[in-house]
Figure 1 (tube, helix red, strand yellow):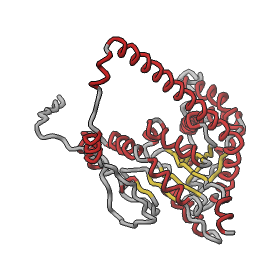
Figure 2: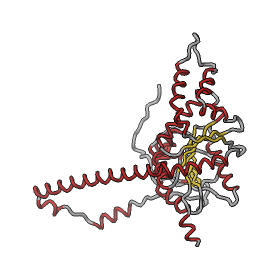
Figure 3: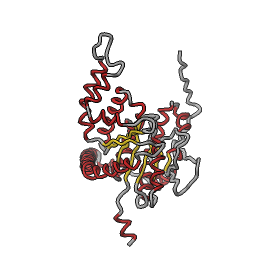
Figure 4: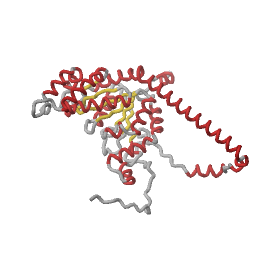
Length: 369
């Protein structure tokens, strides 16, 4: 009976938290983690920390990128700045993401939610190849929802609000996944004004007109004012099919409503997004197979021509299988992802870079000025 119930258990829902620096992503993840632990019965999530530069997270991650990649060492070895170091560390971690998915699948029968906390520098995850690979890999494995965290007190200015909405719109159409706007820090600033601006175009226009920099010295609307008016009209359709909730990571208000939105988004994923993902995957596989078949056909034709011109050449095309096996034995550099739920070793990391600069490179970097 237990085996039957476990086999029919639905897959966990993945929540990818994305947001501007300082929006409170990690605190939000800590709050929803606490909420799930407080349920009766408790429903602990499976948490992945993808920020290699963070010094402290307010939750215990099951898989932490810092256990696999040493961010400071990456910066040192490749002469990178902070953002370049984060991006390179994420790229290195992505090369082992198949192991991450394997560990998540082992826990799939025990958890209802898989939560991903992304780097604070939003563009590093949303516009990088590694971010796209991770998002696509997770979305292909289980129902996935993107939670876009917004710093509500900072969006009271119409221009800042519009910037956040444009960024949210771009991420939505890039990921093509169910999307939830999470207005965080509602204990400091209620999010009612944002909902009004999203639901009523005239309310946003009135707020825009009352802003101090809406008109120039001659009393005419400024270029930015006219631009934001036009963009708000464009985004009006975007708002209609968008879920928005207000939460406070400090007090816990709105967390229940957030998970209600997650459940609705899961249904949306299964109804609308999953068929599209499967269609896109089938198309990619067909394109790849066609390319392989074409390459093989051309290779066989080339071999036929070569054998016709040089019949004895094939006799010289030999290799030693023992020599090949020896080479394979020397190339044993596989690195395993650390799952803290099985091996709780705080502070340990495994350096996947394995790169060391040669002392005789003789690189002389030019000094500025």
